Length: 474
Image 1 (cartoon, rainbow, N blue to C red):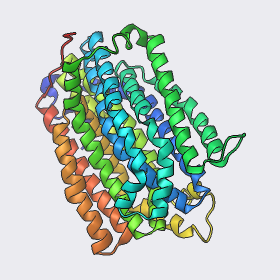
Image 2 (image 1 turned 120 degrees about the vertical axis):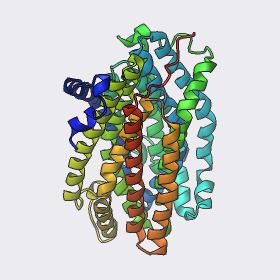
Image 3 (image 1 turned 90 degrees about the vertical axis):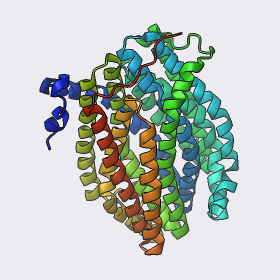
Image 4 (image 1 turned 90 degrees about the horizontal axis):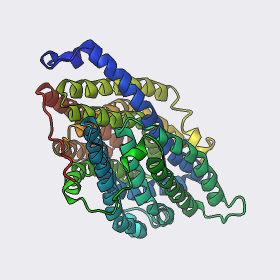
């Protein structure tokens, strides 16, 4: 089936034409490229930290992986809530309701603050959590040192996501990119200085990397607030106006949409966290190789994740206009963009799989050679996983534009835990395929999830489904 066939099947009655999906392709690309580059900038900062820490040894790489496991287990809970700002604001923008756009951002900022302050305390118990999950005392101690500086980035990072969602919803995502691009060298310089004790700063190793990340996230949040408050076209929305005023009806709406998104992120990230823990049970080499291969996968994933955010906005705009054909074309154009990009990137990764681990290990020595070899092998095993992970992310983003989050939550539980976790454990330990078996299990779960989400979006849009858009009652 071609792209045109997919987009036009079932749409004739609702007015879809070839010119519609060509226009949609142009608009999606225009919106997606700065969002995707912003996502790459975010992962570039994490990759920089990992590369700097990698010079301290495999055991530090493994500890940083465990630290990120704890952080993101908490981070995804709030990330889903603030991600609901984008569909709500986009639908309001499509319906030409600027007051609702502002209200959507306001409740997102409230959610980030109310949930972020208590959840930040989790990082103070990182060592106890990791040791309870079967990690060694040395690895848990190092990871806890990393978390002590890192965990405080939660609230500013969530605020930045909400502010970016607002920027994208009004078709101006570029400032988020400029802020992120400025943050990359700032993070690299500060992380290097605090990790190694350069330029008169104390040598703090893992703690320094965490402090650098938190400091840079605070700066990014402050810059985004200023942009949205002072620059055109954002200032006309008066985003900080009445920011302290409670808006419980829309806050409840945000929770209805965002809580399942948080659940999806938690279940999805949870299976990868569980895989990381399984790798820790196998060996330090397996855990370090898994982290390197997963970091490369994460770099690739940032582009389709950016496209998924564009899909949420484009579908949300069509919902605001009450344009059922537009919702369908917006979603499928984005899905096909993701397929094409991830296929090309997967071929590139496979071709360069033996060189990529060197970026994280500095050089291949007799000590880290097993890590480099295993990481290269995992990248080959994950070829189908890479492509389908991009597809599922974009399909989920398109469904968020329809406010459809509860059924995908059920799908994620089935695919990631009933199927994926069982397959990872059975292949990795029962059948004794080790790290390769764990990655095969991950690939299986992602493939099935992608198929189910695309089918869900196809069924809803072919029926002309259109969610209710909240009115501007305040």
